[in-house]
Image 1 (tube, rainbow, N blue to C red):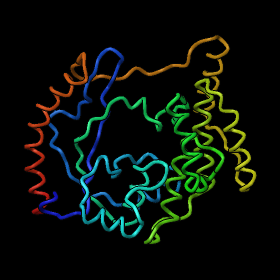
Image 2: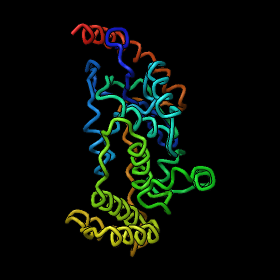
Image 3: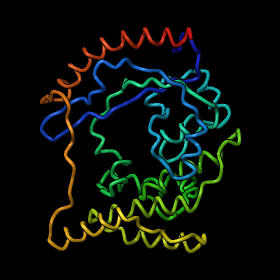
Image 4: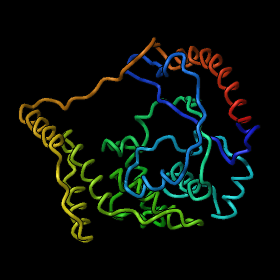
Length: 291
């Protein structure tokens, strides 16, 4: 792709190693399916973020990208640095979204991650703050105040929707091309409430966060959040579980294929299979570039 298309950057799929506690496995893609290369437009990604839809994960966040040195120099000259914000992967993404209209994406996982439960993003999403998470929050308050002011709810550092929208707002404030619209406050409030209700259903104490969002709603003249029928049923079931003293249900990791006693064993098998798949990928990239 780089040889035939000369793009500023190429992003690629990534996957999480499945960890059950006693064994490890690499997630399996569809068997026999040839890898694909697609061109992703950035406008829909920006629009999704402005509506607090953070589901697009196939985005270039540096760790899952090959980036042109010339493009990095361009970013550094325009913004003063390559990374910004409290979450540098998303800070980099916002600068990419500001600079390019599209990017090539290799839809096969060239990166396999593990131990994601130790990440701040994961702990914030599930509101499981450990020592590392609390240290990160303390550091942010003392050293990164210039970025925290961009949060829709400035006094909150742990609600994942607020964390994500903060990075969008930093990107919007520093944009050079005018691609970033104002974020939709009602959509942000609705998504935040939906997330907090899920945490509450899981038994998390989110009373302070709920109070903050109700204050945010009142200050901005927004409509109250209404539970859907499906959400109400889940809420009732969770309440019954709490009354009966039952633990919230937790899904077990789904493993398709063999498991291994160590991470190294799992990756060694995957490496051999990947070498075979990359032969197909190379043939497709050549055809893609010629087309």
